[in-house]
Length: 103
Image (tube, rainbow, N blue to C red; front, side, top):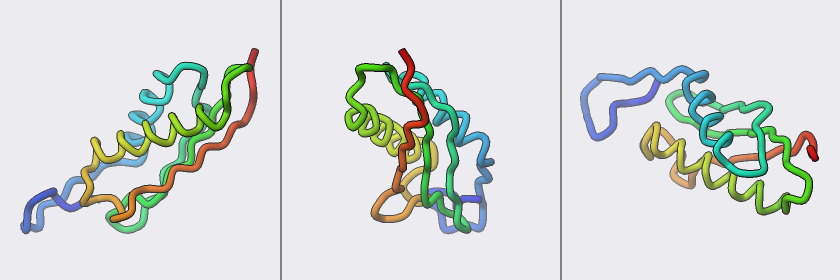
């Protein structure tokens, strides 16, 4: 549950975890050379406090670059979806786990 952005009222917005995961999956699927295998978001009260994205990478991809692209895309998508009020001030840490390399 997230507070309504820019409002002092008691109104709330409820965003289910699977909605976030689904949108994050769509973003990661669009990144060349990686395929998401699992996405987990960490929630604490009314904030998204972490994200962990498991991927397979295409052989030949520079893994650090692929992970950086995934981190940037996931972080930007969380801000776009939830707004900065629903995120920690210093941003959401995004961990990337490379589960496999595919040909």
